Amino acid sequence: MSETIKLERTAWKTYFDHVSRQLEGRQVEIEIASLAIGNQLAAKWLPLFGITYDEKNDLLAVMAEGLDHMIRHPREVHAEREGADLHSIHVNDGDGASQLLRFRAPPAQSPPGPGGNAPRAAG
Image (cartoon, rainbow, N blue to C red; front, top):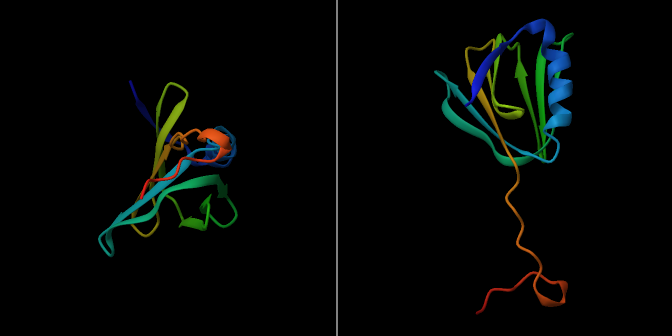
C-alpha cells in the first residue's frame, strides 16, 4: 500500500541528496500543470541523473539525460512511496504550478541474439 508524506522544507536538501542515490539508474517523467500553460509533459521517461535542492537560491533541480529541469521557489513537496520504493514527488511551486515527478525502472532490454548482436527485424 502506498503512502504520501509531506516533506518539511528543513529536510529537503538532505532528503533529495539521499533520494538521488536511491534513484540511480531509474527513469523520470515530469508533468507540469498550471492555469497559465495547462498540462504539459516536460520529460518522458528520461534516465535520471539526480535531484538536488539549493537552499540559497530556493531551487529544486532535476537532472536527466538532455534536460536540467528547474523548479523555482517550491512551496510544498510530497513524496509517494510504497515501502522503500519511491513512486513520485509532487511539488507546488512559487508560480502556482503543480509539478509531478514520476519514477520507474528502465524497461528490460532484449537479450542479444546469436553471435552477440541484437536480433534484426525481418524485411
